[in-house]
Amino acid sequence: MSNQIKIRDMKPEDIKEVHYLGSGEQEFEVVDGEERFWKVGVLEDWVASEDDIALVAGNEKELAGFILVAYHPVTRKATFENAYVKPQYRNLFTAVKMYKEAESRLKEKEADFICGFIETENKASIKFLERCGYNTGKQYHWMNKFL
Image 1 (tube, rainbow, N blue to C red):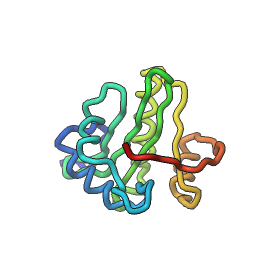
Image 2 (cartoon, rainbow, N blue to C red):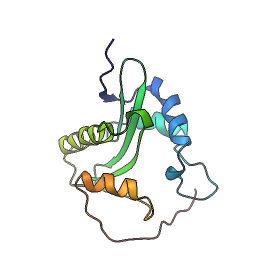
Image 3 (tube, helix red, strand yellow):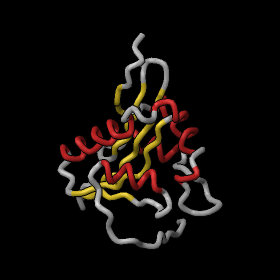
Image 4 (cartoon, rainbow, N blue to C red):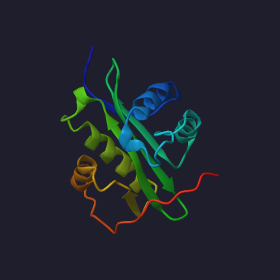
């Protein structure tokens, strides 16, 4: 059996584990006291979407991580939403490999740009996106309203 990490499309059978992993990460919380991560139904729609990108990294034994990118073809804007890599698979460039695959797919879709929203205190995520070629832009307040 090979332990080599491979990047592939997220499948419906991956959603339960991706939801579990994402729900445990405080960094994914955007509103205090609300669910931190995407609901299962949203992940199901993400996997079924022809526009958005949902990838996982893994070997024959287990998932190592995931990346989620939303793409709006009308504006040609992509939004880097979440990336997670299990601790034992970090420092192996797993997140970078997933990101590069996502970016390659966005180029195929003729995306013009990708943006990401990172908390100013989240130095690890800022460093990751800088390694992926992002520039620091303007700072904004996160505003939201539940519908």
